[in-house]
Image (cartoon, rainbow, N blue to C red):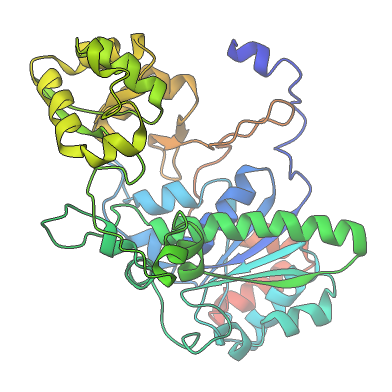
Length: 409
């Protein structure tokens, strides 16, 4: 399908499928901002509330090259498509402004340690007094209830506690965390998905609710069923790049790099036998089924490894694909960014940053044929929309000046 055909009925008058929704976001770092980022990408008006000193993602290295003052890669990525309001929630005046915003908003998103928003008197019970049907999302390390709920919880802790680290890495090496903010990303995704479900419920029944998303729960849910196997005493050895359910499947060294490929179906094995010039193994009962190949994992891996080592990455990938076998190069992010296919899918979008530099920002993953989404605006400068937002809720210029003098905004 051509791109133009996919978007042939696209509307240009909406920011996305959530156009018209308002979100108040009081978050820091990644999981909470990721939830609100998804909602903002989908077209919601997201007001990011930060302490007047700014949240940590604004200061996290590395900065985007060439930006002055420096723009953090984290801030640029996860806070795009949002408006920025500085507000000290520990002050009574800040609390009152937050509640006024929440009263006019459909959704509130926060990811502070459980109990923190209650201490500031802007928790769920406080917000529902001014907006009874509020959808209030709380993201934390271990959840709002349970024996661990009081703990400080961060991404790598959720990866460790979930069992993920025990399986990640090479079999003969130490456990390794994910190189991305995996638990935060999953927590943000589950929170955004939960918001959409809660909106559906509110549309049908007029009821808001409190949504509790924990990083640990999110990691466990996405554990491919391993938590069930662990509960039932099934041994789960660390396999590195091997696949628990298929062989041969691994990364294989070529002359100029590595490829990832694998035989997931028995039909793939028959095609691979053609590639390996071993037609006699296609229907051999010792190799023809997935179970049989798993019992001979080292042998079949060796066959594919020997074949790959005398070829270039491009030749190996093209040959395998031509035979209907899934394969691709193992690339760096720099190499991925240079791939024309990445740009064809709008996964890098040139966006002018708050200080004037243009940077390629990662685009939304989901494509909507009728209500397209995109990176509309760069991550805002700290407090860039404070006056605009406060004016929207009726706070006069004189009152805003007093609030600045008092350090509330």
